[in-house]
Length: 458
Ligand SMILES: *Cc1c(COP(=O)(O)O)cnc(C)c1O
Image 1 (cartoon, protein in one colour):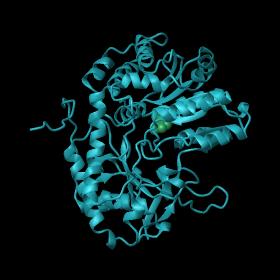
Image 2 (spheres, protein in one colour):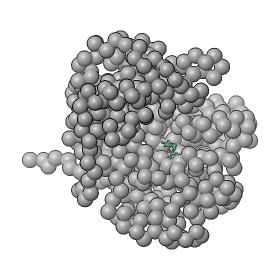
Image 3 (tube, helix red, strand yellow):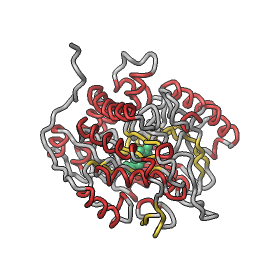
Image 4 (cartoon, helix red, strand yellow):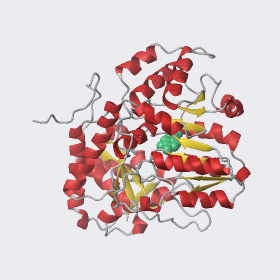
C-alpha cells in the first residue's frame, strides 16, 4: 500500500479554539456591523482572515528567541539574520524593518519621487499605497489570463513582458526607479511567477537600464512552484532555486510575517553597497538603528531561523498540499474558486455563487458573512468594499472579480479543520439560491473603508 501524505512536523504546544452557536454568531456579527474585521478573535472558530503573522513558530525558533541579543548596535541576532539572508538570497547587505510596508517606506523614500513610474505584476496594496503616496504611478503589467478564474495555468502570476516593454519604451529610464516583481503574485491569488518570466523581466530591466525589485513576501512558496512545475528545476533544492531567483534582482523587500514564519518583522536586502547606504538614513529615522530597525534582537533570531525553516522542502510541501487539499474538497462540492489553488489561500469566486445578490450589496462580503454565521469561519472580502470609491466621482468601484479569500495560516490548522471549512462553505453553497440580498453601508471612512466599515442588512 502506498503511504499517504503526512505533515512534516508534530505538535508540541496547543491553543484552544472556542466553539459557538449559530445564534451567538448572528448576534456577534450584527454587533460588529457585519464587518469581519470588527469581530473579537474569540468569536471566531477558524480564522482565515490572513496568513500574515499568524503562523506557528517552531521549537527552534522559540529557542532562538531565548538566545536573542538585545544590544542596541551590532547584536549577535543581527549577524545571525544577515547570514541567513545571505545564504538564501545571496544579498550581502540588508536593513531590518518592523514589517513589509516599513521596508517599502524606507526603500521608496530613497528611490521614488513625484511623477515616477513603477511597472509591476499586481502591486500589493501597501506597495501601491507607498508609490501613490509619493505621487508616483504603479502600472499593472500582469498577464491578462490572471483575471479568468477558471483558467488552469502553472504560472498565473507572471508579468506580461509585452506590456512591461511598452511601459519601458514609453518613459525615460530616469522616470522609472525600478520594476516591482511580486513573488508570488498575492493579488492574483497567490499565483507563482516562473523562472523563465523572472529571467525575461530581468533581461528587459537590463536592456533599458532599470533596477529590479522583488516584493518577496512569499518567495519560498514561489520557489516550491518552480521546483514542482517548471521544467529543469525538479532536481534543484529550494535554497538553490531561491538564490537563482534573487540573482536576477537588485534588491528585495520582505514581509517576514509570511514565508519567514514569524509574527512580526521585515527587511530590505541589497546587492550593492551604495543602495544600502542610501537607505540607512531613512531606516534610522523611521525604523531604528541599522542593526535592529524596528525589531528586537530575539525577533531577529527567530526570523533567522524562520528563513531556514520556510525554505525547507518538506515544510513547503506540507503547507502547499494543505491549501491544495482544501481546494480538492471544494472541487468535490463544485464550489468555484481562482484556479489553480495558490500558495497561501483559496480565493472563492463569490459572484459565481451568490448570483442573486445585486452588486451594490457587496457580494463577496455577503458570502463571507454567511460563512461566518454557518461555521464561525472568518475569511476576507476581496471585492467592492476593498476596491473603495472612485476618488473623483465618489461612486463605488466595481472590480471584475468578487472574491472571498480564505488564507491559511502556516503550521496552525490540521486537515480536519480544512474538512470543516469546506463543509461550512458547502452548506452555504447548497442554500445559495435562498440568499437574495446583501448589505448596505451605514458608516465608512473615505479611504481603506473595508477595515472599519459598518453595514446593515439590505
Ligand atoms: C504582506 C505583504 C506586504 C506588506 O507587508 P506587511 O508585513 O503586511 O507590512 C507587501 N507585499 C506583499 C506581496 C505582501 O503579501
